[in-house]
Image (cartoon, rainbow, N blue to C red; front, side, top):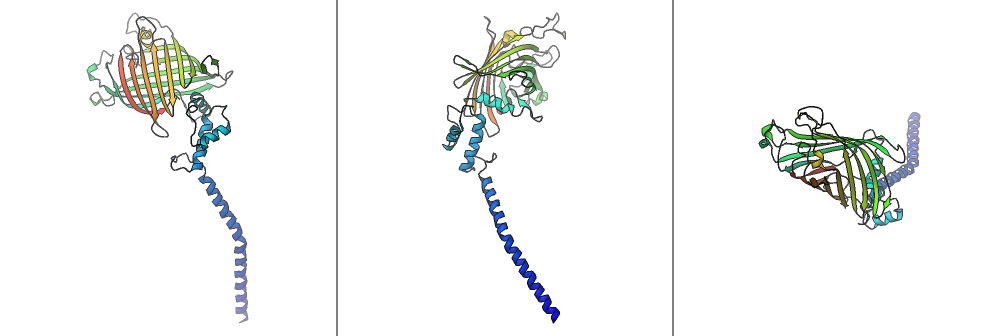
Length: 365
């Protein structure tokens, strides 16, 4: 009986100890629960990029707006102005939205320059699954033009990377590559070949500028060397080398790019089938001596006009209109209309009209 009494007292003592410990730990557990609830509440107010605007709370929308506005706004814009734009329900007023579209792009490019896993877009990158072209010609004596279809796929890949940053006074040395592809993808009768591919490696220097020349707000200066060819053998080889300059400026909401070039002369051929020498001695007559582009960005849309001309009495050149518009948060649509000479190198001396539409991966502004 004595042993039973001792065992009962021991069990009672153990129960009291457990109850005491549980009572002491309860406030700490409550504090932890409060902290977890507070963290959950804070996380709810953090913008989630993958969520749609409709799914975001008002606080999330304002935070997301502040982040994106801070990335694109002018340096002179104050924090008070940023808050005012976002708290009024608008990210940027109409006269500010595209005020610094090019400088915003250059600033975003700077954030990835040192990343070894990132290659920066150079020109537009796009895939146009529908591209109708007129005046269809191979310009190849071994092929029949009647085999070509009017509908094909056109796409472009354009990338650049810095070779040397800040050589002096914020001047950067770049290398770049642009490939433009014309694919008879729907032409199963001739095994859907790539009809033409144009390769364009470049090396150039660029310098952001902030000069005021009358009504012109200067934005960027570029100078470099450019090689363009279709990578084929005679008699269908086409190529030329140029040195060029590019001056980009802004007037109001319009961006202008003036790009003159000088073609580096090549030796004339005695026989068109010779492998060395000039494959296309009259290419300047059709491709011109300069390129002028005018772009108008508005609310994530960009309307752009390109004009080339030879400035001769026997006037020849080309015009192109690009219109890009948002499809989703990541992709944009692109409508492209071309008329003139030089849509591709193999057809540089053929007048063509082309209408295309598809998906734009990276825009110019």
